[in-house]
Image (tube, rainbow, N blue to C red; front, side, top):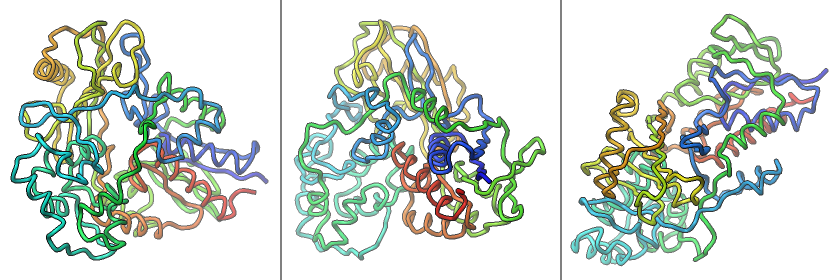
Length: 451
């Protein structure tokens, strides 16, 4: 008898889990994917804006993690990988543009000269002096990034150099992100006995390389999503799962229309806030841990500006908190990835942890703010040829201090043949999601579900 599976959640994590299960269980296995959305992909979503495919969720992936590159190669999509043009981002701080500091790990400098012009002379002196000051560090410690960097280098380094980068990744800040999640290589260097933060960052810096840091998919992530769905060969039920119950040696997944879906094993590839509703009665420890993971919301405004609109030869702008702009980041996509068609593609991101901007601001206001910010930054006053607004509510998990221990507790509370996958576990980027999905599928197979 062939195995049966349910995958709850049709984002990248759910689709990769379904694909991995198909490979392990073979063509006779029944794989049902439950997701009520109008299309699969979760926070990976490609829209046509100005006649061009344009990602309005995640737009790039880190190439130093192998999972995404390996998956593209495995699916025969290696030729669709895009590399950036080499343009660099700017930081907007103190109502001025600054070059993004080089020689840093997530904005934490290895030397004071990296931040000249971005921070004041007193802060530069504090960075220079840091190696001479005693450092108290307990191996395994996981303070917030703000706590560590603020103590060693001062608040300006936190707000002007570190926060813009972390806000772009997590829609959070250095106060909501732990050191082990944001800069694991720095934490590891400190554990090994680095005598200062400066020394730890220098140890953690990758060797100089001209290789690109980021990659993207030509045609948008929809190319990857469609191939995963085809190969996974799932039965897609456009319903919302509301509860998971034991059923004999397997499981029954109840949906919001009253139907039950039976499976030998289940992968729960849903955001952390949705997990407790499904499994609190069968995995209370897991549900309690999931509730402790905080989340943020974000909104993306995609604009197609007329071809030839005068934009700087930079990949984008990261905005420090407290500036008289509404956007937290602007990406000049046509500069970053190369121009396609007769339009200049730009995306603006809004929303940080703790505010309700993404959820409660109307499309017209977001578009007006986008126009105002582009005018402030670049003097651009032209109307867009096309636009698209998309919101991601409670979609950005915050990797707070102690996140690794919290995730271990969450996983430890799951019964056998029930597994989790998603951006709140082992990293917020697409490669990390691919990794969690691969792990979840392997756990079901090791648990003896695949026959």
